[in-house]
Image (cartoon, rainbow, N blue to C red; front, side):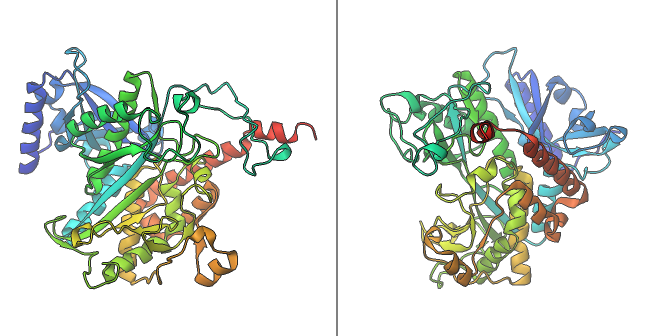
Length: 491
């Protein structure tokens, strides 16, 4: 069927066609995300968009081969391009290889309606449109951390007897483990564990890579505010970009990952967004800053701001925080969705494990940054997220939890101004401080009982996500680790 495009869509399509022709693009990388959060991509010759009907009809594909989408008897699906997202891939100069990337939404057979398995179109866009219909908008700024390694050998285990959780020997020796290759672990300027934050070169070996990545990200429409070496050794880095609205921030997340991995590969390096690749060192998080607005961001009214409040926070902002705390345990399944995520959510590595809020305080799950004292800068930072998540699901779920807090006027209580890690169990109980789930299995059990999260995801994505994650947990439980051999072989 030939699709009739709205006026604004026609303009975007014409602009996209002009970009393809002016840049002599040969191939278009068509992008979307599966339920787990993995970027999916296929290539179509650019002529199908310029001279053909790809913009009007989309591209058919096999939905049964995409995790969490469709069973084989309902496998025909249609990828519909979002022309406004077209970007030329800036690091490809070869005229034969010249490519562009474009995101799209997934439709059912015949392209008749948005598919309820599509995280971008069905979840994120639905909530963004709902906000717009109420004259509101929301923006999000994720702090995406990752590691840059020179290599990794999954078949080779390393022993490190002097690294142990308890600082002793014997039973507390560190287990054999996979150790990624990094010059920051081996050179004379070796960065010690947990001492990498803001280190300069030559200790920081990632500066030139980050500068190049910034250059290409900005050509992809992602404006970087600042970047630096993070706390962990072995090339942990962070690049923060300016906030975007819900669908756009999900797209930017994938462009960020796509660029980070490809620029690394060009230099013989590996960029990994695995939350915790290093034993007994800091892990990678994705602290997500967020704010609500009446009207458009920055030109409208900042809903979270109250100049008369001690922390510049409005009552609605406090209710929003209350909603995040109320749904925190279920949110964790979406925001920290891998087995490895829970190696990050432990005491001692700056990751949040206690359910509370506070201004300035990085030991709290929800933090209110206090950098600039003006309404447009007031925001809430949710710290229980890592870069293994599906951003369309995880960030939408955070928004929904916050809006639920406003709707139900959920009081978050007084802010906790102390270091939560230093409180005794009795003090935490007295203050009503709960804990996040400690395993993926715990988290998905909490997700299973949260009706709001089920409503956000829709029944298909909810069921598919639960099935995928229960299977992932069961696989993990069946695996015999090197640690078990080290610990129990001589029983």
